[in-house]
Amino acid sequence: MPIVALAGGVGGARLAHGLQQVLPPGDLTVIVNTGDDLELHGLLVMPDHDTVVYTLAGLADPVQGWGLAGETYAAAAMLGRYGQPTWFRLGDRDLATHVVRTARVRAGERLTTVCLGLQAALGLAGRVLPMSDDPVRTRVRTDDGWLDFQDYFVRLHQAPEVREVRFDGAATARASSEALAAIEAAEAIVIAPSNPIVSIEPILAVPGVRAALDQARQRGAPVVAVSPIVGGRALKGPADRMLRSMGGDASALAVASRYVGLIDGFLIDEADRALAPSVVALGLRVLVTDTVMVDDAARTRLAAATLAFATGQRTR
Amino acid sequence: MPIVALAGGVGGARLAHGLQQVLPPGDLTVIVNTGDDLELHGLLVMPDHDTVVYTLAGLADPVQGWGLAGETYAAAAMLGRYGQPTWFRLGDRDLATHVVRTARVRAGERLTTVCLGLQAALGLAGRVLPMSDDPVRTRVRTDDGWLDFQDYFVRLHQAPEVREVRFDGAATARASSEALAAIEAAEAIVIAPSNPIVSIEPILAVPGVRAALDQARQRGAPVVAVSPIVGGRALKGPADRMLRSMGGDASALAVASRYVGLIDGFLIDEADRALAPSVVALGLRVLVTDTVMVDDAARTRLAAATLAFATGQRTR
Image (tube, rainbow over all chains, first blue to last red; front, side, top):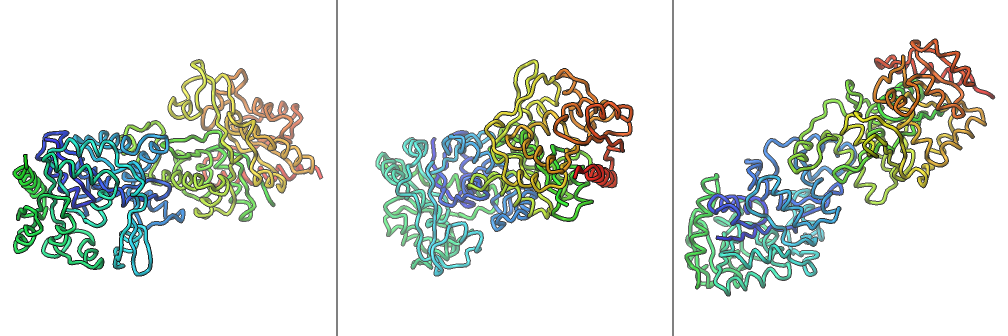
């Protein structure tokens, strides 16, 4: 059963890992946000892609959720000695990923081809597709002006309030043919519990993605989303504060509202059971379940529940 | 007293380090061979430059003479996992050097400017100048055909016999203005005990270098060389075998012969004292001394002896 997941970083990686556990090898395609990507020390760094890939490969740091388990930082210390910016600290093995990727892209290979090659080398059965081969860069407007996403996210530790978000390059980016084909072939599409504003919406902003999802629904393939907000709080990252600082409400319901017209069903946590009628009132089916992925078993359980929920409501 | 040294890798680095010990800060300029440079994983790797710089910075691995002391190899293992060639193994901190250098050169800075910036960051008082900002690549002809230098030197462990050497790009390369100015200002020029065929002659092959050395001699600044061959053997590397496989004799005298017309004086080891009259017969002054740099004190002693020998024979 070919399944597509749209994902950002840690939360998306965890659900993708659960989906990998419950699906036959090769059935999972993750379309990953590239709006968080950055050029650092002349290298193309893809935080969301790499978090998902390292997680699916079983290499991710289990505590922080991103980066590689047992990582070392010798190169980072030397980069600092040379006066390079140190606020985005790259591990030694992670640096190798960026070096190889950058070399292959510079040599003329398509970004998607390069990423798939790296994934194959790490033994992934499924695929993690950049949403586009063309650069898209998320920028956030704070009270001090527009910032590059990682400037806000890592360098400033998400301290400023975000007033507005834009995705530079998205309007002219082309969705990768692999991503569009995966959506076209999917039996169901799962929107992972990632930040809707800066992880999922950049993917949707790439021309062609939204239309492909609409077509999938028209042919009966459901689109379901898992709430990244539980009890009014983001489990990871600044999604709750962003929802508020951009004039909304930090709730699972607010996320569901953003996805109206895009999805068929919405998964909320037991903690948010009281919101279920309001989600239904948006015209969505709802599943109330335990969405907090505290361990591998919880990832697998949520993935299975998500797929059952998605396919149980197939319209054909 | 501004002094210029022409140097390749380990042997050159050791004498340069000795010169740094005996000269006032800032008086030493090393012009370094770039014919050994290579592009690896999309990065510009400069083995001779980095060996000299790490040595002058006190960071070099004291046993192998190249690379950084206490180096780790986490990134190299990951590069191998991605299917990158592993025969030229880069340490984690060394990788940082190549990453920064490549980024700055790609951003449009001149190679010399970039190298000087890295050196300043490591606290060097003197300067290590690439012989040219333009790429020159040494290639060696073996019985199996032409090979890139590092292919021969590292990947094949210098197993094939070298029949011929060429310096691709040298004819159209321009010597850096800094290198030419340093020769012009030098009170003496020292050719380090590096491989004459693949470390020193690439430097001499860059248009302008040889003429600048001739002019220096004309104005009275001596050029002296230290033999890299002691007792018929190279202390490091394949210089002895190369001298033989290219149809000559593996001796200090053979090296002196290659330098006739270029140098005023030649330093040979006590072990080669019997060759002194033959060196004199070539029209060169000769100094017989202990040239084997077994420790820091020996580097300093040889550097001091070399400078005294050079300046003692000044012609004005």
